[in-house]
Image (cartoon, rainbow, N blue to C red; front, side, top):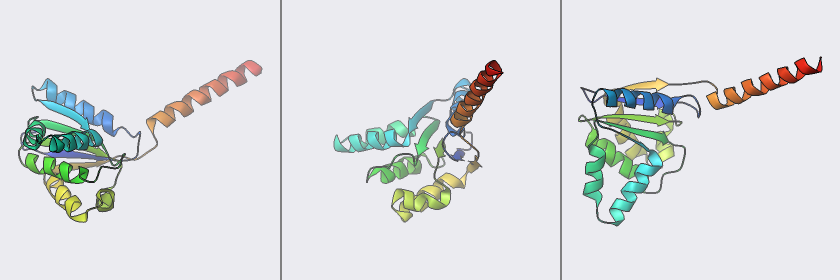
Length: 163
């Protein structure tokens, strides 16, 4: 965080991206830093509401404030038309000043189509990746693994009783 580095967690749902983001955020809080956690959809909604209420500058100051901003679930829900622009502006104002952690299920190569604007996606990636660790996480969902393990245990227990 001393050099305003970023972290991008990229992977499928349930792979642990949010858990890792929260753990890093907790470590930052324990180190005395201000941290704010939001989803990409919430960030876009707050920015949209602020623009409608003529509070855009206040909203941008709010998102510039924390030493670490965690933006979760980018790509899970479609952003409103102005959502990609708002996200870019938040990333742009934090660039080289504060750290950002972003979790997404959208591969970097697909950001242009995900945002519907190749220029905004490229500019956002340019700033995010300049000082970033990109962590690709692959594998099955831990929720589905848990469900499968529990179902297997129940099946084994049922089979043991039947024998």
